[in-house]
Length: 91
Image (cartoon, rainbow, N blue to C red; front, side, top):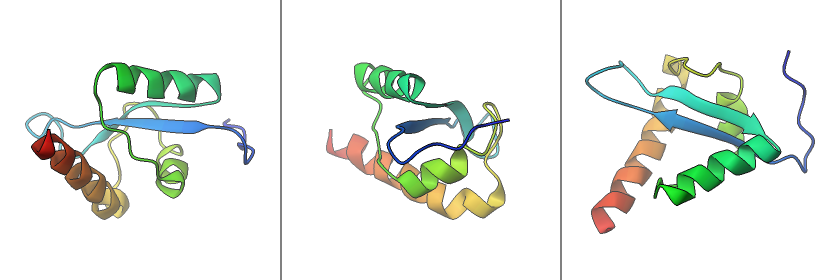
């Protein structure tokens, strides 16, 4: 059972998406505290765009690693993907 995070606990969720492989993005990693910090470090080291959205992280953190996001989250995750694609287009 997942424990409830405190307001000061850092949380992170990483998504992966291969349009030819899965019907929707899936959870690649999830963690809080030191694990969240490491997820962010690895993303930064690999040039992966990071979007800070605590509300979305709270929703996504309820899913299991490897789980495809549910249809209820498609719209908000599509906004994240659009953000990533815009960043890549500017690079």
